[in-house]
Image (cartoon, rainbow, N blue to C red; front, side, top):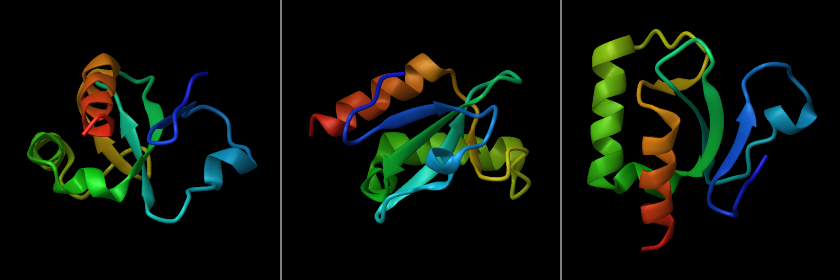
Length: 91
C-alpha cells in the first residue's frame, strides 16, 4: 500500500487502529464507483480547489447527505482521484 505525506490510501475493508486515525487538518474520503471503495486521507486544503469541488458536487448529486460508507464518498474511479490529488500535491 503506497502513501505520501499528502495522500494516504487504505482498504475500506477491515478496521484497525490505523484506519481510525486522521491527522489534524485532514479528512477521510471514500472513492470508487463500485462496491469496493478505497479510503483516502487528504488535507482539508484540497476542499478549496475547483476540481476537487466538482467531485464534491458529484458526490452531493449521487448521495446527498446519505453516504453509504459512513464518511464522505466520492463517486469517481480511483485513478482519476489519485491523478487529481497528485496534481494538487504538486501545487
